[in-house]
Image (cartoon, rainbow, N blue to C red):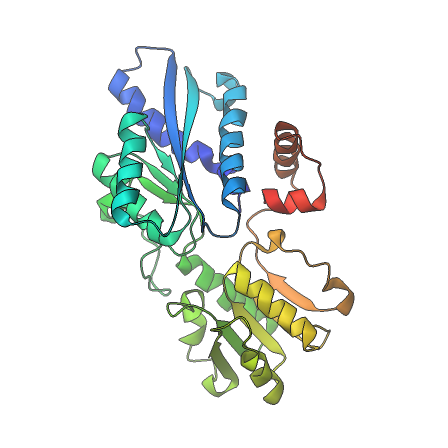
Length: 329
């Protein structure tokens, strides 16, 4: 998921450049823009230090490109300022730190944090000071109707969202994806395991489909890392198809638990709703002929992805091996 920072940093730059260029009336040929990166100790799907390193690399990579590469008549020189937050800190302290980042270091746009509670707070601050906000957060969307048609009219988009971009796919898109996948697999009997109380948002289209026989769909909440009852239910009811709608940490725990219980073999099929499957170490599972299905947002064999990874490893003087590739993605 971190590679999205490299690929889509340009979205933030377009917004900021438009604002700055409008304010300066294109009187100069070089624009100095400062972008803030805000990270926490509880960011989704990665370690804080990894996310911060990728952010710094993305700016380094952008500054190396000539203005011709961006098809611009002027040059943008980007500077970065980073802020590390402790999720357990008070909201007052967080507001103080973010406002200091904006006003004292003259930040003109902010990237992150992926941690939902603080992301909402930082988004609100950016809205009130009228600067762009970009994020990669799976839980930072408002409640959506999965059957509602997409809205193409910017006039109807809330004003607070017109200067923000969440690079994570919306719940509406994920609902369509998982609904289509399960229908394609022709599952008629399966178990859904979720963790948080507000979970199952990515599976509402499937659960509300009148064509699904509810008696053949078992839904269980995973509440404790030692709780094996969710998998024992599957064995007792002879269910071999399982959907894991869990965060990354819980997904790893449940898969390891299933391996210990003899449920990782060709008789079982798992669908993972996480989009961070590239960051998982699946070495222990590949010899058991297990069926694991998940979506990812990019092709790791794509030439642009390979170039970005190689450049990043050179930037950090890291080895280009499988462990570091999982770190990058």
